[in-house]
Image (cartoon, rainbow, N blue to C red):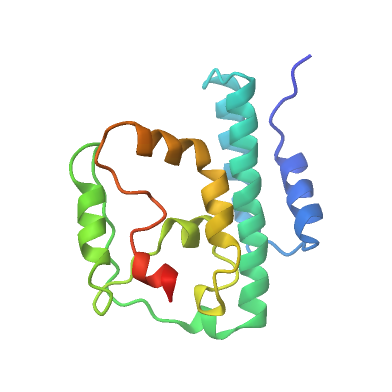
Amino acid sequence: MKQPLDAKLLITAARRRTRLDDFGDETFREPLRWLLDCCESEARLNAIGKLTLAEDLLQLLINRLQIQRDRHRWPRIGKETIFAPIFILGLPRTGTTLLHSLLAQYQETFSAPTTWEVMFPSPPPSFGQKGRVQRAERRLGAFIFWLRNSGKSIQSPLTFRKSALRS
C-alpha cells in the first residue's frame, strides 16, 4: 500500500522538528492540501519524487515556523520597508539567471539573496550564516555535482555573492 502525501503529517513533523507551533496566518493550509492532492493525482511521482516533494515541503513548513518565531523575537523585521522590489520572471534559457547575477553584483543598489539565504532564511542573515551554507550545499549536493561536471559554464547556485560569504 502506498503512503499518500498528507498535509497534517507534514505539519506535525515540522512542529516536532522545530519545537514550534505558530505558523502565523493559517491560510496556507488549504493551498497546501490542493498542492498535495494535485501531486498525488496528476504528477505521477515515483517513490523518490514523493520523498523529495515531502522533504522540500517539510523544509518550507519549518522555515515558516522559524520565520514566525523570528518576527516575534525581532519585531523590527515586520516593520522593514521594501522600496520598489524587482521580480525577475521569464521562460527557461532567456537570461533570467544572468540578469539576477548582474543585479546581485551591485549590492549598494540591489539586494539579491543567495541560495542558502532563500533555503534557510532563519535567523535573519545579519545574525550570521552559521552552518546554513553547508546545509544548503549538502541539500543541493547532487545538483552542484552535476553542474560542476556537466561541462556547462554555470556558476554554483550558492555563490552569487562570494564576497558576502567570506565576510
